[in-house]
Image 1 (spheres, rainbow, N blue to C red):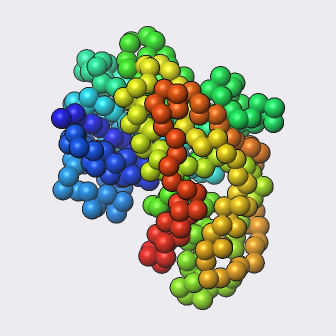
Image 2: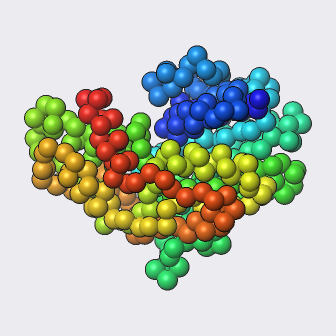
Length: 320
């Protein structure tokens, strides 16, 4: 039985990862970190099957205590400030949380001589930033051109992970996941916002006006439940220090996501651009090349986009 530590377990990705790991026949022992003010509804149905540890990754002492308690064979470092628009308003907090948090985790492993622990440091397609059309789909060798404070923080995390793998021999695998969506996604992300607004209009007869941001941006979408399976495979088969794209390889404009959700709804709203939903700078297209990871693991997305969007809409129908 392996011991697994997930930082940020109560979040969107962390909760789906915990569900997936608990479904495996090996019977892993799961530990997860949460802040004292973290909401736990994403994992309340799992509470009896895992151990939650109060921990703020920015606090080195609490991280060391969490690592000492879990003594993990595998560690998924998911805790982060991951909302891109927030990073424009709170760049200091974003960089501090993401870089210092990871530094505390890696130092705790090194100080406690847990060098056999296999670590996932999940990066982001946002690291690539503005990419010329001729460089699409994006390969792992593409030079980063980050265009948000969040993206800058992820590049820094990526490089810090590489440095610790090279300098100290830590078994760190890096991934760069493109847009991953699904139930439990926070309402301030585009597809969740669309679904929540539609669910509200259906339930309450709300004004059929849909607030939107940039609908022209092209993104590469996967279901989060496919992505967490990829994360586990990355730790099973990935090479320490290496980096792998996790993506579908297919680009879709945000407008297509909205159109699909509207087609599943009973309302047909009028669209209205909300200036607050526009970013100072937005990469026009982020579409990935996943061949390297597929050849290594055989992984490919299994869930159809339409089904993922139906699940998201149904999630918000239940919530409103």
